[in-house]
Image (cartoon, rainbow, N blue to C red; front, side, top):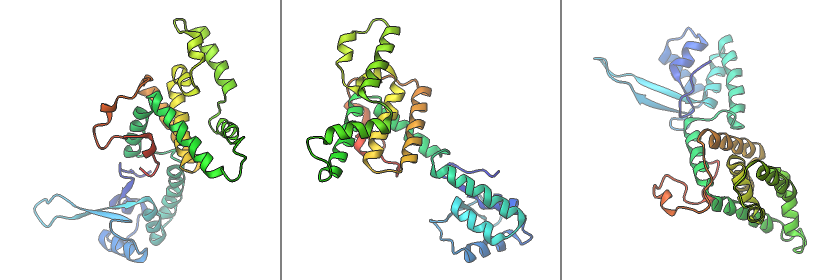
Length: 261
């Protein structure tokens, strides 16, 4: 309906044109900002337009939530239509069904980080330690790791029995692998060799559940990462290459992965 830019904002002129108010643009804009109590650098940002000879104009970009407020203030039938669309858009955004360019770029960094089996093992360890810490006084220490295994299997959809069955089926179709050696490997290694995208999905869930992220967001982000791994044709790597993460913008350790990025 309206263009959402890479920063997840909407241009003020686009909103103005759609809601079809009769007030002049800058009068309408000033009234909306004042009535809705919108704050610069929080609800909207301003940019100086390139001069065409006279005094340069100012461009306004509003967040999706601010645009909803503007629709309420504008009070036209088109504004109501736009507000309903923005509410639906917000739900998609909240569930990560709709991602920005920056979010997609971050997901690609996560995928590159988790192509290393060693990093997947670290993600598993982070999740396990988090569970133990949270439940140490609730579950008998004798059974706590067994309880973690059941809890995690329910979240990621894989347990030892399902993994061994799947890897056996995989080995029956692919010659050249040392069956006995591979069957002795840990679960992250087995799944990575069988399907690196699925292994990355599981590792993402391990990390996000250990941080108590919303389960729906965690699931959607993990699926996004799996799809990216497939599109990027990611191959699993057994060992970490420490030189890969020289750039400070890269993820240096799986423990820093967070949806707040």
